[in-house]
Length: 231
Image (cartoon, rainbow, N blue to C red; front, side, top):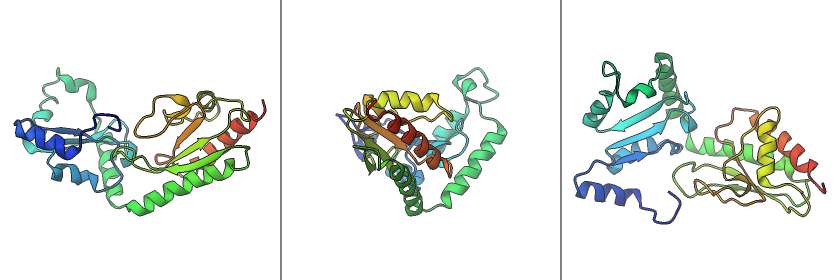
């Protein structure tokens, strides 16, 4: 949590265990770094979940539940043959489970530094296509929070010269071909995951792109921003 009243993970574990309460960490987007797959259980969390998509790059409908064996066994009781439980709406097919296992194998073979370098290259390629547009400034930014702790591209500009809001840029990107979704912090929306926001701020998440998609995003952003110069 990046907001006020933030509690450290260590304090959370300590207080929970002082009161005999198991503690859970929703770490859906907390990888990379790779080591977070085991850091949180070693820290003392009784259960930790990770999205099978996001940083792991596997099937979006899957996830990992790690931690105490007895609690995981209890969670499994929400599966068949107890079909009328909360788990009914969270069924995962066999091929999706195989996809998740393959994604974990792939992820464990990666290197944190190499992944960050690639994310920075993507951000810099996009920034390079925008640098000639009047008043546009770019910055590669890593949020200080655990979730989404990867390079993002921040784009700001003078709305007196580029006559479009960040929210309007987001709408044009979403409705164009191909459809492109910008980070929710774009355009004055409440800042999320430790990212700054503002009416003339565009935030591009590059870490879940497929190879070559940064070029497509750069082209569309350039078209939208250049088209609004002096409009």
